[in-house]
Amino acid sequence: MNSKVNIIGLLEKGRNLLYNIYVRNMVIKMLSRLKDIYQDKLQEEVTQITDDYYYFYKDKTNCDIFAISKTISQNEYYLLKELYNEKKMYTYDYDLQKIYEYLLENKEYPFKVKKIRMIVFHLNKEDMDIAQKLLFDIYQNCYFLELYHLNICFFEENQTKIKDLFETLSVDLGYDIILHEGLIFNHRYRGEEILEYIKAYHDNESIYKKAYTDLADIILSLGRSEYVNLKKALKNNLLIPLFQDATTREIISVMFKNDLNVSQTSKLLYMNRNSLINKLDSIFKETGLNLQKFTHACAIYQMIYLA
Image 1 (spheres, rainbow, N blue to C red):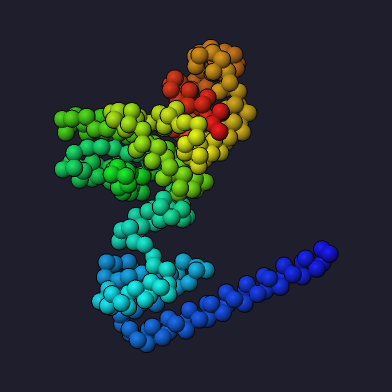
Image 2 (tube, one colour; image 1 turned 30 degrees about the vertical axis):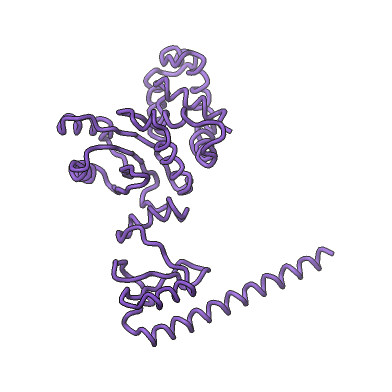
């Protein structure tokens, strides 16, 4: 019986493979025909994305695209849309397009660095260029985009603290800039989870209007039934790795039992106070959560019980 099932499975795989080869060959022939018809208006190999072309996926099995000039008629364009899947263009900046696809289409992690920090900020429109230039000058791998009418920035962290930077900028501009110091994330997070984080910030008016909020505020605001993907991601990517290390697990446990008192915790753990502070700093750099802050400790505690 098992051998019969295996044979059937093998035949089905073979049939699917032949079908994919057939489809691929048909696509190649079709593109060749289109090239004959449109000549220089069609680019089989796309090296640069511009506003002068429509972009289509060559087939459903890979991400290869071809381009065709927007000078074709609307009827021709609609016919091509029936034959091929059009690639949605959010921007004509290559790196930003990858970020939008990650967030809105759940495609691959788009950043060149292992970890990236996300912030959201609100300031007067006429001052946006000042804020962007400042962030570009200070941080590497810095990208700006807009979603849900929010100004969002992703960047690689360094020694300059973003909160201090925005406080200085607020003084220079003469008004309070609203800043949300968000998640530090990596390739383990799916785009839909990061998008859900942004949505959780946007949907919560009490957070949205505060001058300064951070990751802990978002975690503490998560309800029982909402943002399922986000809660699962935070638990899997923040909490579980944190508790895998026995020393970290013990530090958190003793800190909770002693009202976050560092001196008392270091005594009970027989650990030098400076060594404990260094360990807490390491946790903060990795997760964005500072166990010495009450709201951050509460956020870690709540994550334990996130459904």
